[in-house]
Amino acid sequence: MKALDVAFQPNLGAPANTTFDKLTSYTENNDAGIKYFSGTATYTKTVHMQGNSLAKGSQIWLDLGDVKNLAEVVVNKKSLGVVWKHPYRVDVTGVLKAGENKVEIKVVNLWVNRLIGDAQPGISNKITYTAMPFYQANSPLQPSGLLGPVKIVAIK
Image (tube, rainbow, N blue to C red; front, side):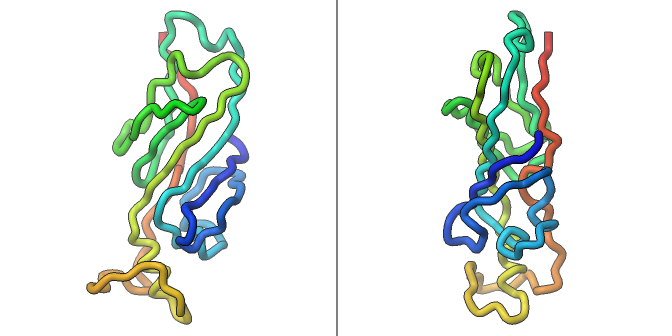
């Protein structure tokens, strides 16, 4: 998948919306609000399907590749459930149609990175709070987000 629109849960430090040219961990982003983001981010992409790619008798899957940490998949406004372990894939048979399809992937990650972000020097407006500071400013960040690769797979 190329350029994806990504909307971040409000009031958690990230910008409201951005575009990712490729799937990478939030931790690789230069924007500190994204780098340390914890919460729900919604990836949106319009996918064009050729009629012949939806051959009868085939089962069509949306394979998300790798996800940190869980994802809800919505295709054409229909929720197809939540995936939380390998393989991160959902059956889209009968939901994908010939032509334009709106695909939304709502990814939720752990709050570790936000705790690390809030521990960075000079941070005065913390987003999280914990009574036990298990994570320090130099703690390693955890991969987060939709990591992919995302593929549509047909199985006969």
